[in-house]
Image (cartoon, rainbow, N blue to C red; front, side, top):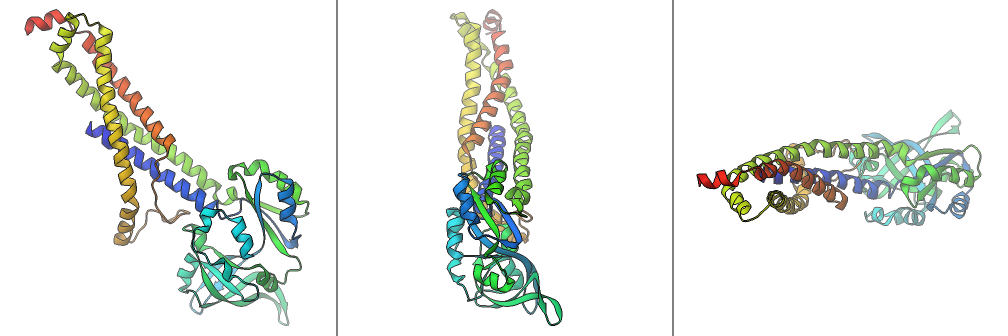
Length: 381
């Protein structure tokens, strides 16, 4: 029984870690990044976003931006970043509520102030904080008396963007009007961000948005181009872990078979008396199978409670371990936090697997009990 509890608990906790990662990825990444992006380097109509929302019901929100890749630097360090010019109110209407839970001071991006919100990872690498000044060098070239030169402008760090994702190490936000002035854009924006009602519906909505935009020479990308491989990997990884850890449950169920065989042997006299009093083989079979079910039920209750408790303390233990050894298990992933979520479908799947294995494993010992000869057993007694 102890082996069954350990195996099932391990399976539940591992499933919970992967489910927690998926939930945080949905909340932090898909709640912030655009699901579909239409861009045009020469600029696009400011009313494009509203036009798409009016014609495509599956689009939940839109935001016109000015984006450009470039460099952000201090006197000692230089980093590559993706600069996105936004309007504070548009950001609040575009991102989901869960993504807004982070204390990002969007209101500091007032036009004309040349303020910048750095991703926490970018700020950490540059060793800057709120109030410091950084030099922004944009990839778009401008004409100077000396030829083509990149456009540069000093920005004051107004705050940090903390999303607990890999976006913190690659994105910086500035005001839309400031971005237009630095880039010397003739149009209101050079990209349009769209958030869908259902992010998984991106393929079927993609063409409708492109047609509704009614703009030539548009470049289109989706969130799946950036994070689709990660989502698919997580689902396959979760299924693979379930398959592998199911083997542990199978081994524990096999140990239960040996225990049931010993139980049948120790209860031979009771089975003989039951058969003598009129009990049939079906009654004996059901009795031992029900015993196995009772063991499985108690084990499952204990496992669910134990997995829940482990899920509460595991993030704290992970942080302590990270501080001790200096290496985080989450390095290299899109998220920078660990959470455990026991989802109802996952628990039901584990319960069904356990009941199935225990039932199959108990059939042979129960069948052996029905083959006992009451007369021979009672004669020996």
